[in-house]
Image (cartoon, rainbow, N blue to C red; front, side):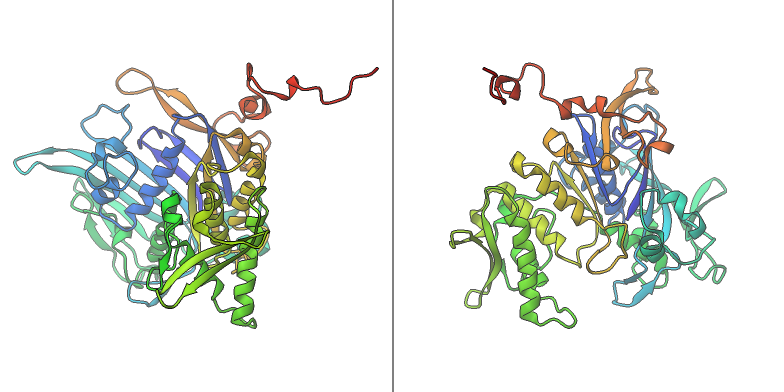
Length: 480
């Protein structure tokens, strides 16, 4: 769970910091840089699995995938010879993970702060070498006694915090030292002082240290890597959502929505202690159908996965209230996206951070409350212990839709806007600023002024000059 993100020098994120709760909605106009927050999270996730350059090529708007210019990731307000971007992420990591060889690893502590600093060297020399370089990397524990100062969203201490934040550690897991003018990254043993640190030159590192940890010998670093790998950006596409699945296909929903039938089949056939397979499947299908049936105008009564043993295909089927059963391909784009989120919500194995842009796309305004309720229910409930009924999921969405903003709670909302920031070139440049609502948990320590309802008038009122409004209608009978 990502509780705090700090970014400096990445796109239009300069001296940027934000705290996240289980569910966060970022609302703002087009073009202010809301998506850059997701880009920063995605970049950190990619860095946990890929070399620096491959991670850069995987980020949106860094050019075509696999051939983009990594310089596009840096804030253009800098004019120096070497560009630098810095990231810091405070996160709750899973206590137990498995390494790439299937061995179990248990983290020393489950609350950590990860920092990474990356620079850009322009290509030079005959071989034209250059590109991204690792400048600094660190992974430090956040002491349990200090956890309440770092996890500031409302939560139950005994039921939630004490069950996800525990362990003991004082020393760093990764640190960067300066030796004779060269940055050297050291990996420290999880056992405290046992064993000598493993040094490596930062300048010659093609990837972060976290991305290279694949074994159980460094369990806390590995758990941090697994947490960052679980951060993903959903971009549900109708074509992917409408695709049937082979029996041999993966059974986890992809970022684009592929394998929806297979994912629901896995959830429905998941063994539950003390419950028969048929009863567990019926309960899973009923839960998804209830979510879908709550949508106005959809008329869904039942949901199931058809198993075609002859062709070895899974097909998601929906029964309408008139008794007609149709394949999910017949649903509208918005309803398909809603269905995919409902499947994710019913999947206890779906964990980690989910970022989603404009979830209101394709959803009728009459169904916006159901969409917000589903997004909120996708996230972990911080008033209860984490278990299969309350998996450790986190949801962050961005939007510019008044219809969606009006159903978001004040302490879940951040307003995105741009502000002028002094640049090295002398010409002020616009950077992103996220502002919390007044009198909410983020506002008391925010470095910027909190917003009020007056700041959200474009989301709460009918625009001036709108050709259709309630003012045009006589809602009460005239007196005689």
